[in-house]
Image 1 (spheres, rainbow, N blue to C red):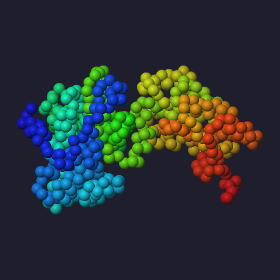
Image 2 (cartoon, one colour):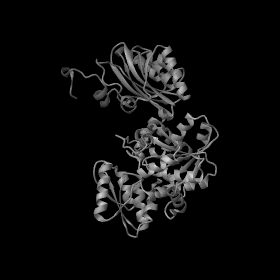
Image 3 (cartoon, rainbow, N blue to C red):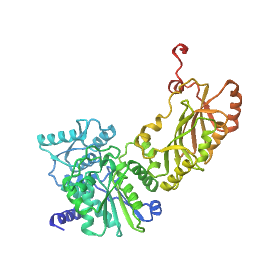
Length: 514
């Protein structure tokens, strides 16, 4: 090891961040350990006062400055809070430049930590350029989020704690954005225990380290995704890449759905709700275990942050089953005839339907959008496809189709091409295997279903929205079947939303203004 890297190691050993930074716990993920065949631990950086490891690097940097310094940075996330709280603790003045598009919850969080927020520009690059010019004009100290020696050293204290807490370790999985956490932890781990594998984990939509490794130098990505915004960095830092290139053994990239599944794994085991970038390393650990045949290793991942906007939870929950391969999304062509829904259910061989979207559109065939529950992952998905093919269904696997997952699943349907004599109902029924099939057997075989929407959310009660084409003579018999079904229901035929968005548009001359 050259002197420069040895200096990093010594600096991490000597770094004193304890006045503000907490020594976070290491939690055993027993359920995940049993599933994957390894002993798996989670380093809980969500337990920091700002719910992120970023406090370590910021505090280490600011603690070396003269008293009453002006510190300036640009950030829309965890780094901003780390700088603000560190400055307040050390008696510095902190000015944080944030894009005007930054969510109010993050702006308020920085202000609550004592930071002065300046909103400038519509993207991070504009905010950073303004912060640097402001720093120069006012004689302040700019605090980079990752590409800085003192920041890297501060982040390296995560590894120092981890090595003291776990004496047996085979591999450590570390999330990568700009590379500060990876660089600091990797140089410490490899200096002390070179046999431990250091594995960086990136989001597929912002894999700047992987691109740099392939090119042999930092390169700028054309664009990055915003889902895991804590690691949405276009270009790895120069110094962080230099260290990562020497001390990182491997880079794993994961999809947004795989990150969502890891958020759920962490919650189930610890009741902590990680932000997407915070669950990134655990998602990479899971993927690495699936791709490698080794067993019985001791593995650790870093939960790097838990600053999650509450409105992201819905998206994460929606995508978790897809990331865990416990659900498949299918676009299927079925016959436009009575009983076709029931026949499709039987073709699933007892598998649970988690979502079903349909709207009558005329013709001899119908296009449905269906979610199907899986217990055997990828292997069961292939078995399901084989069963549908054997039953002569034409279908498309939409499980990895981003357009389908983000938009199409909510847009299936619309208005029918002709006027229908139909009634619309909302049904609520106890969620148990076969409940939906019973619904279809009782009603779907006797009357033409013209609209159908169902989504299983794992609750005790399921909800279905369905419309039925009924003649005047059928209404009494239909009502008898409703009573026999025994489910709670409410008729919505006169609901203005049904009339506005889902019913056939009558000719202008036939319309009546009520």
